[in-house]
Image (tube, rainbow, N blue to C red; front, side, top):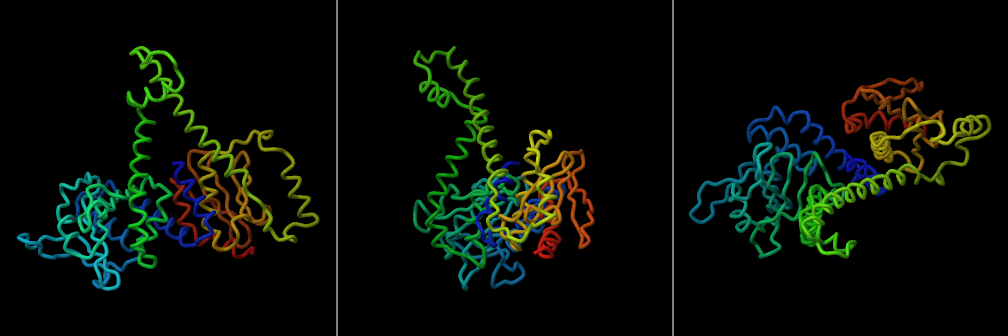
Amino acid sequence: MFHKVTLAAVMVCSGKEFQVEIGERLASLATKIEQQKATIETEEATKNAFVMPFISLVLGYDVFDPTEVVPEFTADVGTKRGEKVDYAIVKDGEVQMLVEAKAIGAPLSLNHASQLFRYFATTNARIAVLTNGQHYHFFTDLEKPNRMDEKPFLQLDLLDLDETLVPEVQKLTKDSFDLDSVVSAAEELKYIGALKRALAAQFREPDDDWVKALTNRVYEGSFTQRVKEQFRGLVGKATKQFLADQVNDRLKAALGSQTYSEVPATAMTGVEAAEESVTDVEAPDSRGIETTLEEVEGYQIVRAIVCSEVSPSRIVHRDTKSYMGILLDDNNRKPIARLHFNTGQKYLGLFDEDKSETRHPIDAIDEIYGFAEHLRKTVHNYS
């Protein structure tokens, strides 16, 4: 789940509204997949429920306009007649992307996507996409010109999204389509992605070579079978502790990095400031308050949503034993939302114009995006 925390943080810190928007679109589609995945059984249903929304909602193309999206795209190739690719995406009158879809849950094997190889060489498309609605593999022609590579340069899992790839998805959208930029970054993306997956595999279950390489850096004796078995356990513990330390560092940074230089000088004065200072007299640890990762994630999502209305530095959280409050200008009289995550059922507390709170039950943190309009309206009223 931590990747979602950092996704929201990236969107806030970038200051670019388009990244907030595409992040919301991806989160919305991910929620839909989570809710409907179990009921989708066929390839056609997958295309209707997930692939077409990705093309329209995330990439911004009109799936009902044949000048933008051509379903069942046909271009006879050699002796192959009548073969079809599920979708051809057109930009400036030229086919730019080919999309082949499989049923949700199906493995993405190129053995079942031979059409992509053939059509790639006979059209102007430089991008080919193989998807099962949840996973998206993007290909180009890095190894041989006009011949689709066998390995993707970009892989997305919408239910476990790597936030560093959001800007790369943005380059493929209708409004920002930048083929040269995509292709120029493809080689680096391809190998960085492969290296990250290799590291993740070693962190999950280190193999003998990985254990030996690390052991030789800290142990001067012979790498015997007994030493290998001993250090296999130690390497596993060390990598888990290392990851935990990294998460804790990110959490501390998220909780302690806010600055208030952009808060208006008149934001708190007199009695109001006195009330605020009394509220903040005690340090969090002295009050027995524990801030969870889910609360930080919820706070970052709210912050990402409302930064379209005010500077992100003005959005502040205050944790209590029963809920985390999210305020404008660190002011109790300007509540934006409350996160009631300390019970079995999670609730998002929203405020009306009279500052009366209504609690909305949510099952997943991403559902906060569904209340984006209300949150923006609340902040707009204050500012």
